[in-house]
Length: 639
Image (cartoon, rainbow, N blue to C red; front, side, top):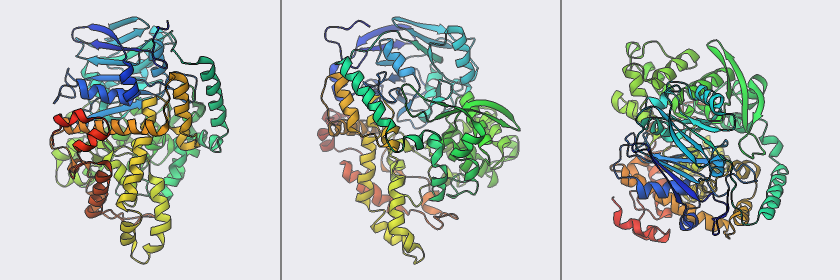
């Protein structure tokens, strides 16, 4: 790529816009002001959505935006610099949506010359987007339509060449299932918020990219040297050898031991078969090889093969979230069964977290006689792979009226089924809960409640904070019957939990701005200052970690404002978890007898809103908007 006289260092320097309806394709320069104020990735997504999304847009209508964004560290020679961010208005929640994935797409997009792709409109028929450097085309995808995500990628690799990086949706995305995902690299998914359905609503089956350019760097030799130092430093961290073999699956037994493992649609928080679905079983029974993303020195992906009574498959995974939801919430008993459910979700094109959660919800409804066998088509039960596979197909293909209902997620399904089912529809804001049961984990509960896209752990993983607090402040008091009082004063201290959650909500998403993976920092302890140092070497602009966190806070505030604008009556009520967590004490396991009361939840929210400078309804005040640099939003605010 030719280096312009005043080229942005670290960035490709261009935005690609594609209007599918008019088939107009345009390119524009990426502004230095936007880079300085919003960095990249998630920051770009939030900025574009607030500025350009027409208010009250139908998430599955032609006016919704679909955004792909990389960050300034993406595509460079440094550890795990392959993250790609996606953004839209969510079909699942109706509010702000983003999702990210690893793999190789983001770097390839930058090598093709683009930091961001913004897609509007709807193609006339099944189509895919072809990007090869300066060649941008909207092509027919008729021969790929209806194919599974993995199958489609394999077909396109054969048709176009192995050196293309490819995003696909499956049949679920085509049928606008509200938790449809985007797949890439035969096992990487942007799973959350239903953005696969947004692509399906635009008649886009796939996006392919091949780039042969380079990215301007302020000091190439120094950047290369610092990159080498970073790889060496990561490899010398104490957790390096311990983390890579099992990846995220390695925490399965620990989560179960501390009583945070979801079981039977979060009815309880402990299972007896974790030893059959843990990281060791992934290595013993499934793994063929490690699989990493772009420039990753710690490949947490495990490519393997599974064989069950219902079939066999090659797949990547399962990771912890998939294990916890299928192995715990759905109660599948072996790692082979969990892996097969993982594969089926990948091929159908649905998020494993939401897919498993919807299946578990349906089974509980069936057990409670809230839905009938005639409605479903067969008997379904926990711990039965055949039931899970049947339900995944039912919802992903919108088969019969119940499948059509389940395809909209547990919130919408429970609002139709009613009969008390809303109390065990496990979600926040319409996004299904991920793999941690939190009736005795107040900080993690608060993190789920206040995550900007809905119930998701990746914004603030603070379970360890709760476990340490429980071990030192609660455990000894359980037998004395004083656990609740002590927890309210110590572990659930509103200020303590709120400050800890807020800090994590600024730190973890900061990596989504830069375009690199956070796991080297989280799991290995690779110091955060390394990232701002690399940013400065690559871009030529000095920035401290504290300055980056201030930008992260601004973007967190902005995403809250997007949802406040787009969701009717948005606010405090939307932040509450399902009633199961505050009405039903945990019936078994290490946290037997615990739940978090409404009073405690309100204390947590009060402390959180106060610490953030939001009003009692959870809306940023004008003073806060001014403090974080978004004062121009105050005039548009709707309470």
